[in-house]
Length: 226
Image 1: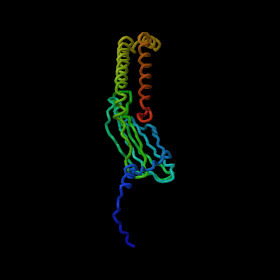
Image 2 (image 1 turned 90 degrees about the vertical axis):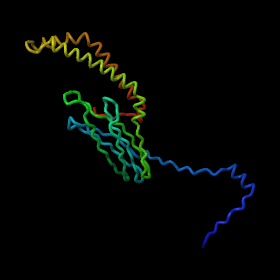
Image 3 (image 1 turned 60 degrees about the vertical axis):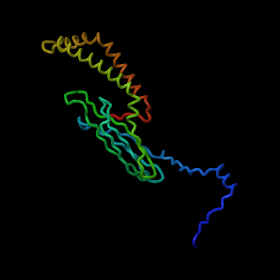
């Protein structure tokens, strides 16, 4: 049976109805994907060259779900993004998938303090294979800029005091010719006058770390190996 579409005879009344009742686009129903879960798992450190992480995605929904990520690797010494990764895929019902990450060491080999890259992460989910993860590092670091400067200035001041103390101890408390007790007493006598300043700087460091962590903790969390 052939269907023939005939032009409609429009009346003034119909035109008024259309003006008063415009045809609105149908809104797509939003799907609740809270049944999807993800977490970051720091793995046991096996090398001084890198720290390893797994980002685990788990599907507890009634059907398969597509996932996408924006992973932004950051140099902790400069807070600059060194690489952006955007993996994606699909995970089936009651299954999990993982993305393995290696954050490389950024401190010098001669530096006893091990420092490694950190990363921002956003994970998005959809029933269609569309990439919807958001890259958040730029906006987050903009909010943290002043706190970062204060943190680095405080750390620089602490290191300056520690370096001055170490130089004095090396000069005034030489290890040769001293007993163990005399060596400890000599170092304590040099450190004691500076201890209050060091304690203040350490306390300030903790306060700044807490303030940085409080900047949009849901979206601006920095993942790092401790």
